[in-house]
Image 1 (cartoon, rainbow, N blue to C red):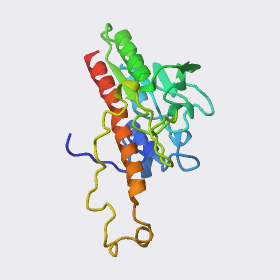
Image 2 (image 1 turned 90 degrees about the vertical axis):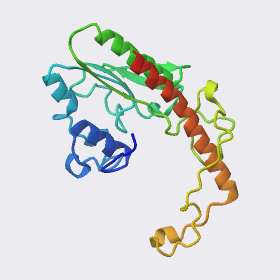
Image 3 (image 1 turned 120 degrees about the vertical axis):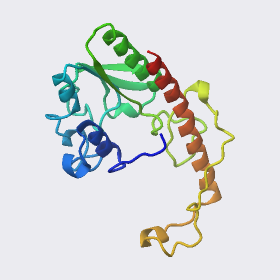
Image 4 (image 1 turned 90 degrees about the horizontal axis):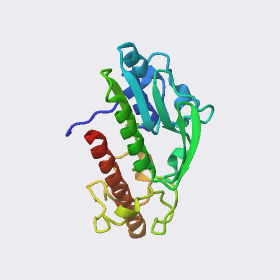
Length: 232
């Protein structure tokens, strides 16, 4: 698509909007962490999964959910027939993470998070498809968000995602985008806080380029996952 709109371009507020249809100032999830945000801030008593169940749907989820999910309890949120949500803070580990499988925590290691979530989503589709009952599937990956483990080519001081070995350095030759706002010479029309920021040095730009490349490389696995889910 070529046009995208968001009421509030932060993780938890945007996810809450997807699941409630409300603006952030109405659903009240205003940040990623308590007391103004995070999973516990979201009212799950009147939201999409429950509406879909009431309409006769089987509801399923695989992968990341709102920030902080599982810290207090691994219980599945109301309205999901099949729940496979990654438990924070392990969500941000690309190889060692814990999944709430319908409320029961299970640890996984040695499998790449994006590939695992794709396989789990495909399994849910396979289980639901033979039935005449319609189903809703929510799938969320942590990539291209940064997460562990740190890798040998990670730039100092900048967090990056872990890249699947088959896609390592796939974008190594891609330059960092430098739009007009990059090290803009005349900042006099910008807010004071921005005017006072130092220019990006050549060293930092190189590190940013590596982080940018790794984010794109991590998304190649997401592309594979989307293709497999659509095919399923």
